Length: 483
Image (tube, rainbow, N blue to C red):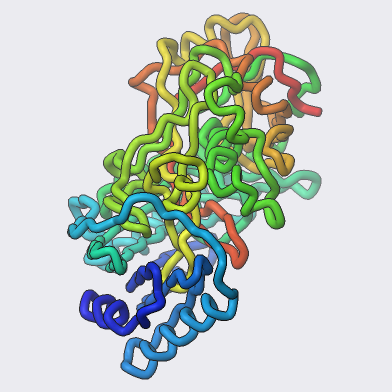
């Protein structure tokens, strides 16, 4: 892989102002067990390269799985031909040269690809068996494990050469219960915003030890019983009230209200035709009140085990921590080299591509809330009337990331400082700065947890990124629920 990268760069014509290449081997193993069905195993392995060149201020990009001399000549001709065909006269600033030469691997204790398939099938089968004890109203059970490995070589014409290996592991459980009149879903350890086979649950940049830590078997019966109980639970009330969101649920709110709007390319308009713009415009940096004074948020690709963690991004910029919101004020962006230069900033190491066949885009890493001084128990005890919600079920949000609506898999009423009845079909809606301005309590450091989400979508053609969210429970005042 390293030899291929160096060979391609050496063959670039003299009019290439800048070029970079990524050679990537990606491995994905999925193991899936369903109710009354045999286990399914999927295994994908791909190897290819993506080449990006800048000529006359215009980009050209091409990718190929052919790493023989003819394939390399062809990919160079395509990338160079695109840039030349676009015509000169453009201007692209990339900031300071990237000359890093390094090797990095994500830490792990047990290589998940070395774990016998029988062990994986036995674990998932045991989880499905436990979930099935909830009775005949359980109609569907899906337990899955997904493992990923990216071996990457990045090199550029400025002298950089970086070799990285990232290993990611995770799994989860989904149970659907129905009684002919209603259908309810429960997911564990967390939900996903869309129905997909596998790739659900909680993930980390770690080894098999993360899968074992999830407690899929130990929690399966409880999760299935909750799905059944939701069938006869009362509806979420329609009222303006106090909302307490669990850390699991706040991960998705943070993702949509801070993660995407604070990606610099979106602020520069490059997402407008697909996903819209953002309220987080450059002139608002440092003066826009995003939330209450107790809330601060940051992006950090250095968190051990975070699904958005790595050593270097796909432009060779080191992983780092970037403050997005401080004491409720919007401060800055996640960025790549080009978007940072356009804003007069230094890049934050947030440029990533979904495999070798895609261009790097600005992608969120681990978007986190700084913990507060309260706890979930204290928030509930201090609430006269409200609801507690957790586990995301779905959402909608406008193209400026302002007005939103989230639905959750389950909730509980709160009355006089105590949890009451289980509630179904819980939803809440608000406007981003109004919602976060109503935050009056955050869980403390002991409740802070990183949630790994392997299904963040962006770009056209679509790219799927793996991201993390470090969150705690939070309490919000005057929130419309249930409408």
